[in-house]
Each structure stands twice: as C-alpha cells, then as structure tokens.
Length: 268
Image (tube, rainbow, N blue to C red; front, top):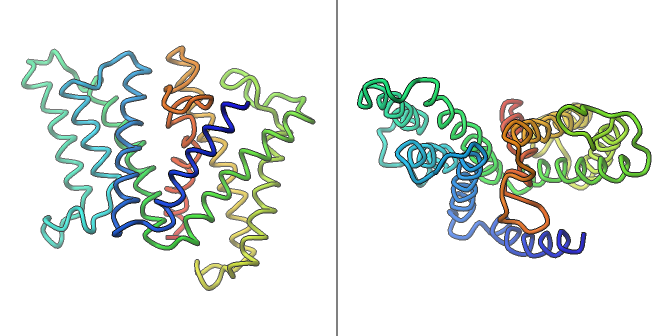
C-alpha cells in the first residue's frame, strides 16, 4: 500500500501540472500520445509479441495519430481531410502485409494491432479532446473515474459479499460496484454545484447526474475489460512502469472507456 501511495503522489505531481497548464497548448497532446504508445507496447507484451516489429511500429503510429489532436499536429492535411483518414491509411498498410508476405501474415493477425491501436488511441485521444474543450470537462471525467474507483474499493472491502464477475475479476463485488456509482454521483453533485452544468456542458444538472451513473458503470466495465485481457493472456498486470500499480493500462483502463463515451454523449 505504501508503494502505491508513493507512486500515486509522484504521478500526480507529474501529470497535474501538465494537464492544468497544457504548456504551449501541446503538452497534453504529447502526454496522450506517449501514453497511447506505452499502451500499445503493454498489449503487445501481454500477447507475447515484440513491439519492435513492422506491425508493432505501425500500431504505435496508428495509436499516436488517434491520440494527437488535429490542431496543431495534422494541419498539413488537406482542409477536408481528418486524422481518421490518415489512421485508416495505416490500417491499409497493415492489411497489405498479407500480400507482401504472400499470405504468411493474415487478416486475423492484422486485427490485433488494429484493435489495439484503435482502443488506446481513441481512449487517450478523447482524453486530450476533453482537455482541449476545458479543464472543467476534463476534471468532470477524471473525478467520476477516481470517485468510482475509490468508492468501489472502500465499500467493497467493508461490505462486499456478492461477487460481481468472478470469472473475470474475483475480487470485485456487487456492493463495491454500487458503492462506486454512489460515490461518483455524490462527487458529481458537489462538482456541478461548484461549476453549474448548463454553463459548461449544455445539459441540465439532473441529466448530467444520470449520465454520471452511466459513465461510472461504463468505467467499471472498462476495468473489467482490461481484467479480461490479463486473464486471457495469463498476466497479473499490464506492465511494470508504475510500481505498486502495474502498467499504464492498469491505471487508465476506466478512462479509456469513459472519455470516448463522454464524447459520444456530446459533452465535448
């Protein structure tokens, strides 16, 4: 526990200034791209593949394209062309390997780097887009994720009895999941009182509270998805970059689901 706390404090001391100030308007984009690259590496590592390969490099490039905001990184593209067209070009190259390798590399094998880059790239790209919208939007999403994690852990440890999904994550409980949702709602209410919702999101406060419930559930589902990956590949953590916590995907798994859903719901 002590190691987890130390790592968390150090990480926050590093990340918060970058997120808050967004130095030169590019630091959050660079941070998102770096995290996306590490995320791809961790997924390749879990599968037992080397990221120092043609498909690994393309997966990292694809994830970085999705993670970086269009402005200022892709202003060289024609005005009517978005970065997703550039990402799709990377996908086409991956699919083209089947021809160059004379079908030794198949579409089934190409699916892994494509899904990997899409998963982490869109997740961290949505994180950067939320910051580009405003700090209020970004911290709304972060607080939902953090409150859910803390609430689920505290309530689950104290009152957890019924297993939520033992085949995937044996330690999670129904009581913990409900505690996470309740914690997120309480924090969201306090946050929306401090920052009136209608001013920043265009939604009435009650609607945002209902959305908070949905985002909390989605965040916990994202956590379970990452647990499913690890169970499938037979690993305990996605990586070792964060002592006491595991890898980047271990810490950002919920956010990779929540921020794209916030975007889908039109909050940014």
